[in-house]
Image 1 (cartoon, rainbow, N blue to C red):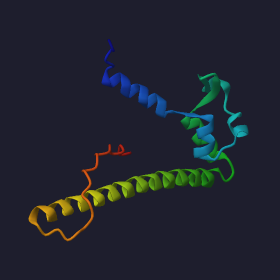
Image 2: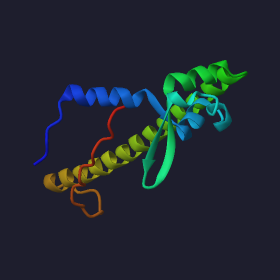
Image 3: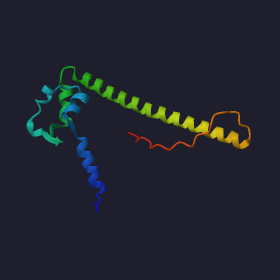
Image 4: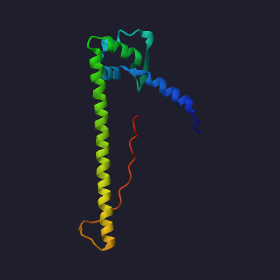
Length: 141
């Protein structure tokens, strides 16, 4: 039997996770180097293990402070964040394009069915069964 978690408890967990960033993601998102991250005091760094690999987790505020205080760091941080946003927008665009294609295909099938029902079949293409609905990607707010 599964135990139900309280919504407030799960919100707190998500909030705490949002305050941390892994070493790999800190380098990717904020444009800092691993050597820069080594300057953060060890008491502010936690270690995690996943499938035998150990990695460091940093407080997001420490990484942001490090990135903005570094010469040229603010620009590098903005560039990295803009690149991340651009990748997210491109992914959403691909998803929407595939959804548009699916809807256009469905529209054509329905138009062919309507033409056959009214006896005005102008198309010689065969009617395909309706396409299965796909799950929509969650909206990132």
